[in-house]
Length: 399
Image (tube, rainbow, N blue to C red; front, top):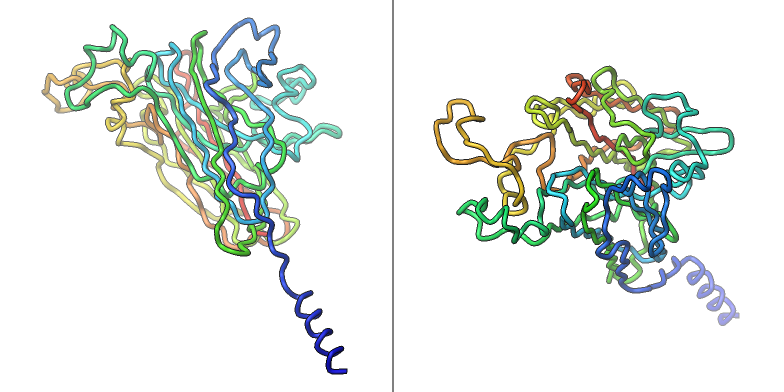
C-alpha cells in the first residue's frame, strides 16, 4: 500500500513539472551575401527576376528572399548584422531591412508581379496600414533595421576623386559600414519560413553591395523556456512598391491606426522608427520637427527626433560634398571646410542605423484602440522639394 502511494506521488509530481525545452544550439542564418542591389529600368517591364532565389522588385531597388529560420524552444537572442559598400553609387540613400508578416496573404510580392493592383484601392498612399480586399489581407512590413547609406563607402575609398578630400582628423576612409541590432523581440515574426527583404532608394545601375545575416544565440541557462510574445504591425510609410508614393501626408494630417485587442496585451511596448527626408537646405531632412504620439486620445510621447553627431561618421563618406564653413554656419568666419555628411539631420546621419523609440504601454485592455502619429510642422512635397517621412510602428506584448 505504501509503495502504491509513493508511486502515485511520484507520478503526480512528475506530471506537474514543466516540460524541459529542447536545445538546438546556436545558428547563423545568411540572408544575403555580397548581393548587388541596384536600379535598372528594365525591371519596369519585367519587375521580378529570379537570381539565386532572390526576387528583384521596384526596378531592382528592393530585393526579397525566402529564408528558413529554426523554431527555438529555449530562449534565444537574435542579432541582425548588415554590411554595406557602395558598388558605384556616390550618394547617401535611405534603406530598410524588413520582414513580410506571415499572417498576410497579400504582400509586396503580389503588388510587383501584377497579381494585385494597388491603384484599385483609390488611396493616395496605399499599403501603409493593414487593409482587407475581399478575402485578401495586407499587413505592413515590419522593419528589422532602418539604415542610411553613406556617401560612396568602399567603391570610392581609394578613388582618385576622393584622395584629396580626406580631412586630417581621420586616419583613412573606411572600406565598408556595418550595423548590428538586437531584434530578439521580433522572434514571433521570424520563425520557420519567412520573406526578408531590403529596400535602398538608389537610382543608379551600380547601386550597393549588401550582406545580411541573423546571429542566433541560444540561452545557456537550464530550462530557460522561450518567452511567448506576439507582434502587431501597425503602420509603415516606407516606399517598397513601385505604385507607392513617398509619404508627405503628415504635412496635412496625422496618421490614425485603429486596432482591436482580442485579449489583454500584457507588458505591451510600442516600437517606433522615424526619419525625415528632403534634401534641399530647408527640407525636412535638415529642419527639426516635433513628433506627437497619442494612444486612445492621450499623449504617450512628444519629442523631436534629431541627430547632431553626424561629423563622427565622416570616415564613411568619401564622396560627400564639402564647402567653406563660413558659407553655411551663422557667425562662422573660418575657412575650414565642412562636409554635407557632417550636417545634423532628422534622426539619421549618412552611414548610421536608426534605433527604434520604445514606449512602454503597460497592459492594453480588451477592445478597440486608436494610435495617432502627428508631425504638425512637416512640409509638403512641392516641385523638386521632395519632403517625406519614413515612419513605422508595431506593438510587442507578452502572451
